[in-house]
Length: 312
Image (cartoon, rainbow, N blue to C red; front, side, top):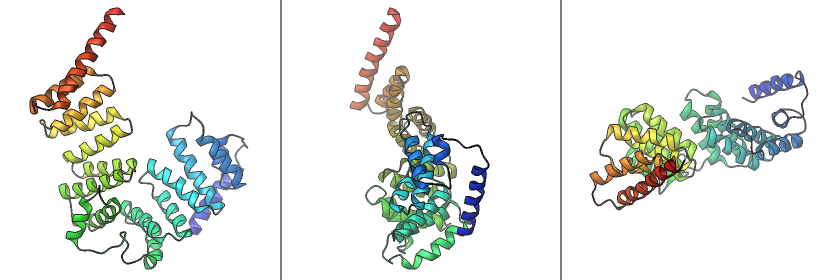
């Protein structure tokens, strides 16, 4: 593995040397060779820029994490690699690098978890398998990441995604890796694992898991509903509307889906559509106080909108 990594580093170094020199922070941040302190400083400036794109931000965290490892600052590297993983939850390369950093500080439990995560994404990853074999003997038998348990125990723990997210992640991973489930049951496991990631604040990985549940079963309403909630948490209200519309397609009288879609429409200023959803909520449940308040609020918003239109 390290021979391959060094080969990549040498190729990148050759490309950089043969390219025109530049003082641009993006270029300096991405240098594999040279002064690590200067590279870290360039990444710092890049991350501090208000104009940086999401893609460049992820790259800057990745390269700063790499430079921290050159300085043997493994805890700082872990923090930066974790920021990349939030944005690229299925990056096996970064998961492996973070696992190696965890190993360097003696945290074999988290190293094991990262290598296992790589294998969950790509079971044929020989480097992750080799790393897992190396750290496995050092992981305590009672550790949640390797607790054997029986299938029924794992199923119960996997469902406790909100109260015990770390245990749930390990249990769900074992059940998924077993290959014993498909269709709605496998979709349920991915949904529980998504909720465990959400409980830990890792919204990107939660959304990815809900997406996997939907891939397995395109009519799994629970995954659409959960993904919509987390998309709304990150401000993607149009994405939330799309997922909630799928829930309503599957279950037309799903009051919660109508209610959340109404709130999402309100957030983007589509008050007439929000009003329609609140009215549907009230039709489903006439004593729904949230729907009643929403109808009143949308009536006022539409009236104000109409008045402004007349004045213009």
